Length: 290
Image (cartoon, rainbow, N blue to C red; front, side, top):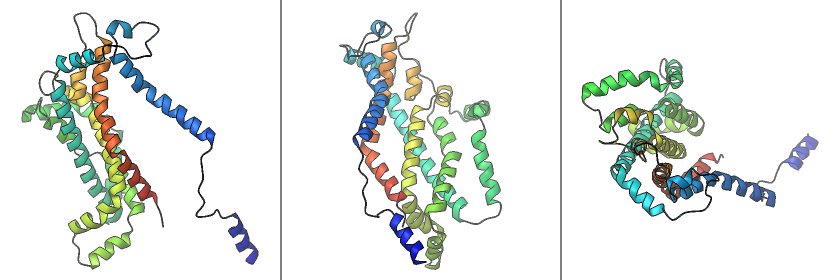
């Protein structure tokens, strides 16, 4: 018995030991960063050249002199300012509603016993296999009857909650939220809303941050349904506005199109630069186990 205990102790790694990355690790990480950033860099390069130079071979690899001219032209050709505001509103509302409803539903599926819970969860997960194209015609008839064509609510309301978000939060709360903590709160006289606010939300905060970022990016880049429900000349989102960018009499100016893509990408980079540290910190805090 002593020999087995000694053997386990001998091979057990030190709890306070810190692992340091070697030079090869930093080289590989640097190469991965360069490969990841190159498309964004070339987008900037293409946006600073004329349309004729962008399509020439070999393609330009250094910035050109037309960046500000292209930015002004792209901004004025379509309703870029209105599209930015609309996209921010749509993506923000969709992200907030999805995080809220998915957390509540995930908590119910994870910790609240009720009849038919597993069957209902299976139905929710099964909806992820249904192609969104199948719902376009009935959904468009609904918003037409309601008079919501070219209105932002036609884009926001169908996306208030997603099956992926419910499943994601359920899987997180199954492991992260002890059922004893919920029962202790009930013994102390806390009602359901207080339990959700003071127990569930603090525990689920890391997963909520990750889900919010994923949903915000998805809603920001969504094109298919907004292109059907909204019009480029009326009340567009960014992706709808970009669909009419750079078009001329006989050809499309690729430099102007890439300039619009650059404009639509910069706000996402700013959001991640401002909130990325908090999101990563929340993930790290949620990953710590006692």
